[in-house]
Image (cartoon, rainbow, N blue to C red):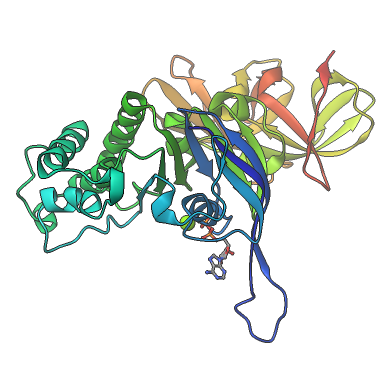
Length: 367
Ligand code: ADP
Ligand code: MG
């Protein structure tokens, strides 16, 4: 089931009674979510992710704009009639019911032609439990389960009605690091097995990048960029997106384009064409540095952090916007932090420049 968001906007009245200014939680969101895909809706806290999800679910009504499931305009449809499965951060299971009863619950209120026999309900519940691998735990109460198991029950409960669309709002945030990794792989597997169009909300870029077919990056209610995770990482539309994706994060410098050269401080790091002279913000991915005795970028080494296969070289540069510059270098390289400078050449496809005011990307060609 494809989902179409058309000029979707949500304004909330200001919480401050004295101010008449409203909060635009979601601002003119346009996107056609392809059928059967997993979309990661990504951005910092407060950027409008949940509001978008709630509008898709029907829990909140858009101020303007429309929502389609396939060709059906569902904008005015109630949550119950949209055929969606919802999973929240806090599993929201019924504590007095067993796992089985929790999963069966959504099926017991089905009416008319959707009504199921007892046997059909049990079969559906069992299939959903099996899919999320909790079929051994059906007689337990939620309090007798780990966080990860509880979240699986919540997912089974969302799937048991065979929804057209699965909506997940930060479903892994309450889990510890290891379970988070494991459960996100599970969600990916379940999504691929069921092929249910899924919207997965998270503030964790790594989580979104690792399991999504496409990501949508949002900031203050406004969509910044939509694309395949690798494409967005490799080709960020603006400084915000460049900074939001990647660990360690991109290195940001004050720079300048002058006479066909890109300067970081006094280091001319690249020759480029098609860009007029101007001050710019420069971003270099940590994996974009090459140790090179004749390299143009001169940093003062501070520390070398061992990461196993790679090392992270921590250094300083006078034009860096952050206290430290972080590069990721193959561990076979020997770095002497006693030396005055470590010199780098920069991989041209790992360096981006941005307009200093608008922070929009400036595209260039390497000479
Ligand atoms: P996210 O899920 O990305 O953290 P939300 O969608 O929850 O963000 O919120 C987006 C913005 O809308 C925030 O500024 C938030 O304070 C505001 N907001 C959310 N829900 C309401 C509400 N019911 N009333 C007023 N403002 C709200
Ligand atoms: Mg939220």
